[in-house]
Length: 388
Image (cartoon, rainbow, N blue to C red; front, side, top):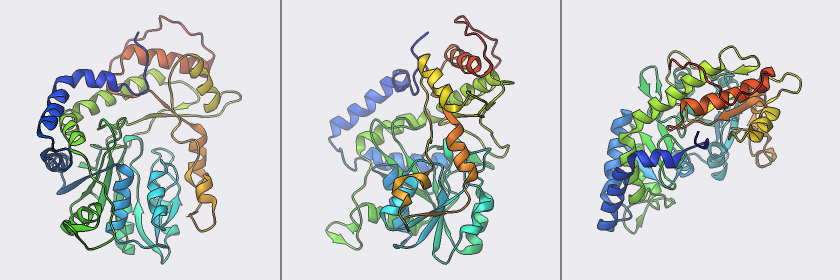
């Protein structure tokens, strides 16, 4: 059996190497490394793939969040409501602009922001809601959008982990006023370096994001606002164009791997597999388990067991955002009851998940997880019939 990788970028590249090499060679021949034709082509193709009007390629996913906030003209002291159970970039982009992140609790079944806790956090300073579509599954957008309409708030979807996932038949990213994407190499649609995008159906917001990302300028040497310099370079756009054509296949491979994991863990005590609500699709950026503490069997002791067996894993996320030193400072953030968030941070563990994951590798991983949880022996020739 090949060595198990948390993310197997080499295997994915091998399958599409000729297409990638040709795309890179074309850019090298053109020498148009900034704002070359592949950038605008990728933006058009990305928007079409997601069923939206506009996409703006930018430097990375964090820039995308910052640009979305800047496009809405949020000011220092304004507040945005988001999740405390996510990567720091979501709140960091707000804090960098002097905006106060306000943390709502999560739905324990999906790890996404719980809409029922949002209204209690709204104040006269609240300007926007930033739901994060975590691990590959959309947040519950209809009630979030209804709350936003009722209170005159804007909605920015952090879609860094869930490109192509659908909510009630519509791809996420264009349901709110703005959406953001990351093309970090390990993402479902990953570049060979940094990259990101801002999504919107609003023509005015589209033009404003473009302007802010270009030093606040619509035309050269005429700067209208204080902006930043953030752009997707031509090489990354060319690579992403190739990979976008394979994204549906990538998603199917991840979903098949998740179904195999589900079958392998069926009936195992002390473990909760990812919940998928019937009105959404899950594209499994991560396959994240919850390990219910039972004596010495905890998430952390399972992690040590897997480490000893040479099985990679990750913990997304071991510390809720409100517990990080950066947000403990008075006035930097505020939050309500985060009971489910804190519990998730203590229980989650993510297993290898990528497009090249094989049934044999998953069986090996699952037998070690099950052996630890139920004190079963590890049999190196472990095999079960898989129907998925």
